[in-house]
Length: 279
Image (cartoon, rainbow, N blue to C red):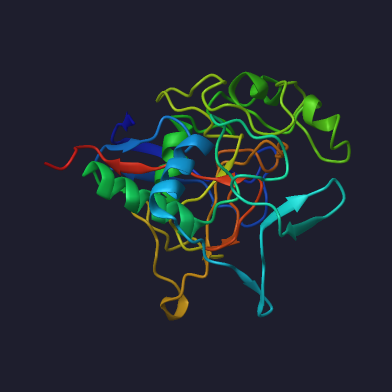
């Protein structure tokens, strides 16, 4: 775990930011009044395997139009779709034990954090959206924690790049080469100023916030926004982009919208905790 200091930073994106997408948070100041801890790396396949072996966790099955979605969402170069045989242990491509686990839902991530809490006595959780972006930026207000130059992305992140384009030639990419088509071992790329790895790229990461189209009333103190219409939170908010992301989807401000039980071959998580361990 890495200590993330209290402080302020502008999150979201300005209207003229490269790759800005409709629906992103407008540039606004976020202030974290209390330091917290964030995992240095994404949860790995090996770490998640221990959790599954110890708990025999049964993942919730998402529904689409009332029909169960069995397996994990996958992209074959032409279209997306659930593949029944794919799961956290078989996302549809070779996966290293020290690479980020994918094909896990928000509810799986929460179950892992709850298990880790019971196992260690320290309270772990899925980070909030503001915590994640604050930690990702590490003081930067640019599109990326390393600055504004997309050609430098491959020094710091496993993103959609020239290696990726050899397999997926129709996808948008960064103008660089990181050497990976799919996920890389965690910690392979340079960290940000807080010492965190893969806050952009490698795997999309779940955050704890319910998804809201309108962010005008969103908390800016690092707390999770779990209130939603009719007290429902069907959708959560992944952040960070992944190995498949080009410039528009691989930035600090970008966010996604996925069902809490949704699973994707590009979506994983990391954990956060209070700064002080409980006694």
